View (spheres, rainbow over the protein chains, first blue to last red):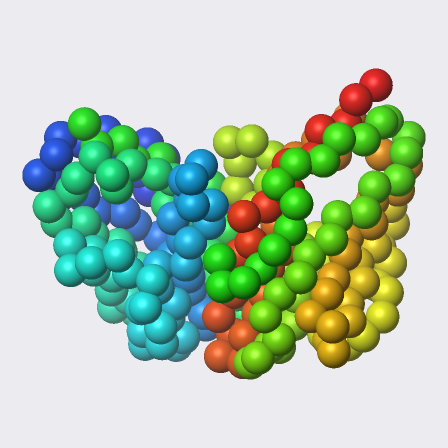
Length: 113
Length: 109
């Protein structure tokens, strides 16, 4: 398996634009996590899906952020409109139901100018 | 994040032993992970403790005390490549993973 795949790896966008980050979890994993990492705040959990259903979205900063998981092999995190303070590395991770270990993708480095 | 406390930075010498401590909130606790993250890379899994005691895996060992809300990661025979951030991660009853701020370990020759 290729592991968790995220795209794009890098994204530079202007303030006010819509940004969509994509994630393909490891096949067979039923939990998916979106994290944001900054120097100031470390790794923050944004949202957590189990069997494609959002279980906990209490970490989503505000209404500008939304996440979907239309099927077991794909998830998106959307920011609309984007702001400079959204600049961070966004990680997607997945885990199988029988093993709590989470496997991380390589992350998307987002820069909003 | 959510009452996970670990030191911000540590320095150790190549070949030595270092212990990184972590305390966490015990309510709703399920298990405790340690992850390693090199600069510019994704976190990678090191260990997972559910029961009290010491789990050994090669040069790395992890300890858990559920009643005390305490864990540590022990790194033996330190190598230069062990320079990284070490993240204490609390797993709750719902499977939610909450990461600490991480301890940046610098290994010096």
